[in-house]
Image (cartoon, rainbow, N blue to C red; front, top):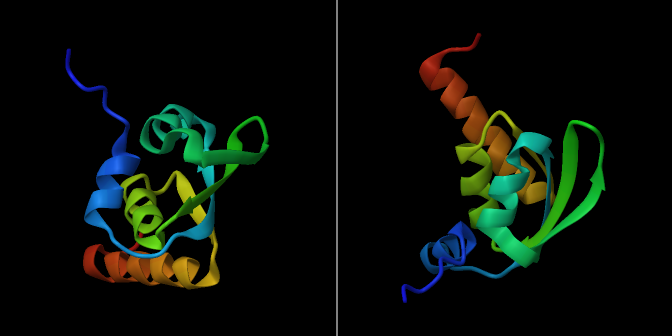
Length: 101
C-alpha cells in the first residue's frame, strides 16, 4: 500500500514555515477541485455564487501567496491586508516584467 497523498497543503506546509493566519480568497468555481485537493478540510467555504467562492483558510500566508500566484488570474486574495499587498506587488512586478495587456 502506498501512502495516500494529503494534497499540496501538506507539501506547502513543509516548504513554507511561519505562523498561520486566517486568510481569505475569492476563486473561480472551476478551482473547487483544486481547493479541496490542495487544502482539504482546512478550507472553509464562506460564501458562494454561481461562478465564484469565498474561501477561508488558516495557513501561513506564504502558502496562500504561492497558491494564488499559481492559479492567477482565477484567484483574488482578500485578507489579511499584508498578504493582499504582497500579491498586488508581485502582480505589478510581473506586469512590469512581461508588459501589460
